[in-house]
Image 1 (cartoon, helix red, strand yellow):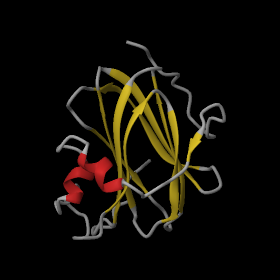
Image 2 (cartoon, rainbow, N blue to C red):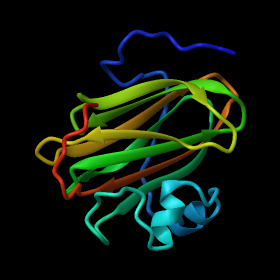
Image 3 (cartoon, one colour):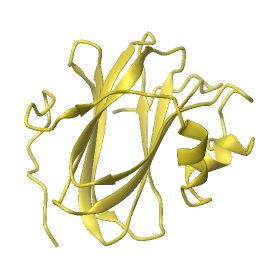
Length: 162
């Protein structure tokens, strides 16, 4: 299994083209994801997080990606938690990093077990509702990853370490 460099990600990778954000067709992209993905459940009215403010969840991304990618996000958020869910077509290492509008790291994580049919969850706490600039996904070239990003307000106001 290919492994990722364990060095901390501190800047977005310039060699990965930044895909523009578009909400157009988001409902169709969500519906194409497996039912176990947070975006799919949110679209059906079910909260993906136990302490989320009812009805306050917002799906920002629902994507099928091949290889490492950078995805633009829509900007200002009123949420205090970002939930990133990934599922892979083969057992691979993945890394996700969330950047603010100025390219500074908000948080991220790496996993050595992105598994087929088993969603992996990454929670990243937001301080002072920053501008969400972009999400960077790192994985082996040619690997297929299904990814969703949902924001929500945690009613217990816990701040997840990112």
